[in-house]
Length: 153
Image (cartoon, rainbow, N blue to C red; front, top):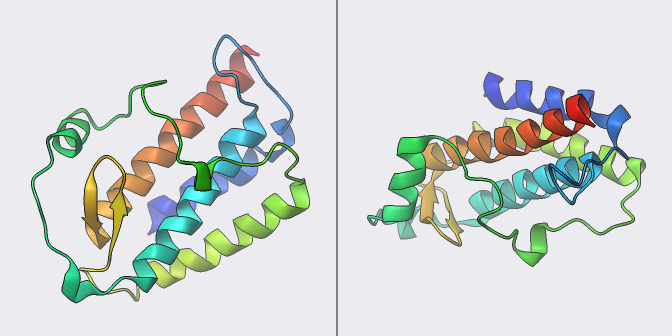
């Protein structure tokens, strides 16, 4: 969990750049990238906690396997589902509440059954271990975009 907590710290460290944007890198602002990341983290952990581990069943999925082998998400190839797209007027205060929730949710991860799962729109059902891998991969993907915007903007 230390790695995920470090990632949350990186998100927090990027807050001062909230309004920054570079349309050659992304149409979204740093704030959008950060907010999206927290919506994903909090939403997925909520789904894990609400899942029934007895219903989890691993199934092969070539898209998941491809991304696992690459260990990176290609930019601009997928569109975020509606429920994890931030609203344009998210305030820093709302964001900080989401960040506090994410920190609390990290502690919850350690208490979940190994077969707690969530259903990813492209990768299918991911158990706890695969979900932690995905959360790290997805958030790092957006932090790379954030760092590109900050450093090249």
